[in-house]
Image 1 (cartoon, rainbow, N blue to C red):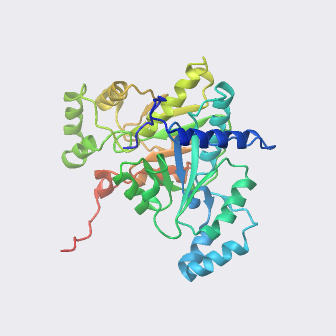
Image 2: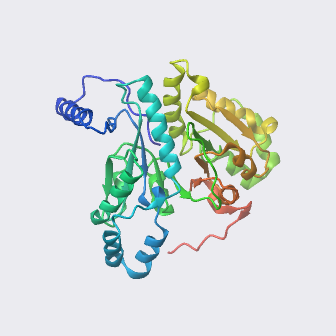
Image 3: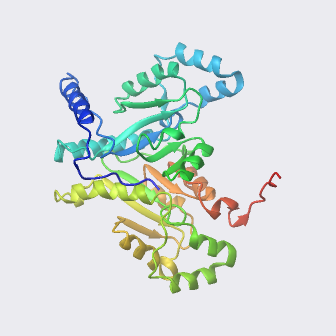
Length: 361
């Protein structure tokens, strides 16, 4: 899984790199706009977003699929002075920028910030419209990766990515297989007013923060066996899931606010929203988080009840879940949702086994 980046400034730092960053700092410090410079990747929490998650490009995508890449590129060039409309990840990115602003107030010289990277397989010619759109909305995105039709997943580790958000489920699956936290984003069916001052991130538990080991027991042996299993292994921490390291990265930044006595005014809030029952299987989850040294601000055990109505109250900027029927229920009620295609849950829908395609010999 994506690792938290090193926090020490050991002698291993390259002098050439330090010179480059000093020059970059001087450049940004001298800008009349006082545009904040991007942090060093080795210290930052790097969020890679695709162009289709950051912006609503449904019409452009339709043109690409129906008329091909040449017509698509020509259209983008022709309309490059027209800003794209916000997409599913747009409110999340704005919330990340707000956290950065608060961190810079408390720690003016800190490099421990969110760094947003645009990671897209678009052609470089389309980059002008993307840049114009980013500038139109005053987004702080300085690092781009445009791969001209090829998958950008191979660059994620080079960009030291902590989280990758895309509309392409195949690329997301590929990233998770490479050990990178990733999810497929979905626009909600209705628009919801989100907090301008606090980043809210909601996670499912099994097969998201944790491995799918307990989920396998449920699917293969039923709830009674699952409850017995969780009681027996209550004191054995669950293995980590694909999003554990992202929660860890959020916790690292939260502690910077706590250190300044800003716990009650922290601009990051995390939620565990799980279908587990608290009394029957909740203790193992909480003890696992404790064993990892991680805090969750709110833990909500629903005992199988729908998640959508509760998420309506939380209003997260992003909600991660491994099961599509939870994603569908959430987005129907206005929650920006992100599917994590990981674990045994991908073989089931609403508890029923999905017929798997025959393997080619």
